[in-house]
Image (cartoon, helix red, strand yellow):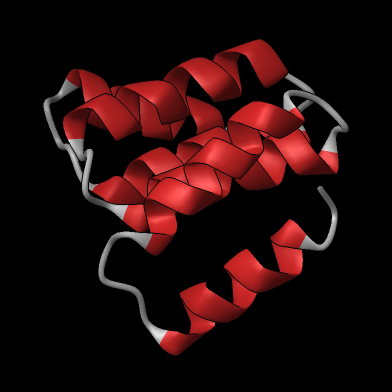
Length: 98
């Protein structure tokens, strides 16, 4: 499983924001929401200025109809970081679902 590969990468101290996003998204697709949330929160702790990890967690919250206040806060925080046009568009689209 891809999730196992991502876990091994983190255990080997390979830390990159995209790894947290991919791992969290994979866990969410496997319906392991608690684990996905834990991984993404860990990524946010490790990379507090990275908007991608915050957007990924907000996406999971919104997509599953949970923790909308937390999702809103994550999107506001992500907006405060340097963003490219794609991230800005995604944030605006996600906000429509809050």
